[in-house]
Length: 124
Image (cartoon, rainbow, N blue to C red; front, side):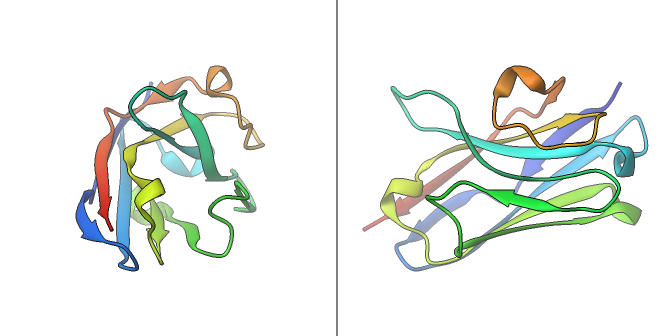
């Protein structure tokens, strides 16, 4: 069992940057692949990106590629989502999710553990 807590959300202006953190407790986080998702009001939860177990390959949705970067510091049991050049359409609740398998699926049902989410609001 692993518990996830996201932090770092807030209100920013278009073009600004934010760094979200996903910190795990309960088990060694290095053996989990982690995905980031987001959900805006009235929309489905969508895959943003993720980082795999073992060799830390990263994957991104086309909508954030080149602007967002995912990294992990296993010694801190933390995965980061660095968001640059933010746009109003990035406004959403951001969630991290984990699974104890290799690979970073884009489907929410493939993840076993979820955080509570953190709000990101980008004003124009």
